Image (cartoon, rainbow, N blue to C red; front, side):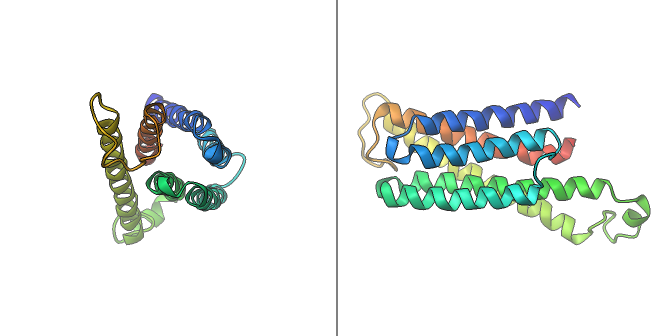
Length: 201
């Protein structure tokens, strides 16, 4: 399906963009961020080809481990950039949740119709399927809202004539702030696109 291919292409593009942005960060935070970005990019590639390398649960675990390690290192080495480190960590958590949710949604479509008709809500999982949709939607909304807040704060800071007051990353220059705005926007778009995949899968 064309729409599904577009969604996967967008996820790969935004994930690659995140890796590129990580490579442009301060050298103290660069290696951990790039490695975490590569893990996410590999997960997107595997998802696009039908999970032929690792299961969604395995990718979710790898994402969570890389997120925890990256967030810890960034908070330890650059405590002034706590908000950005938390955003990256939450992004990996959101992607891990959506990977598992996408797998559950695809598995549900493979259940025989006799099992579907026996379900109280017309789906193989009944109430649990509805709860998974709520969890996925809540994840996307909260993360998108947090990302939008970060982008607006950085855009205001880098605007001509603005001062550094109120910045969530006071130690960054204008170029680094621009990179971080792109990184935040790319991560948020990737999460939104992931949430749409089950609807067209």
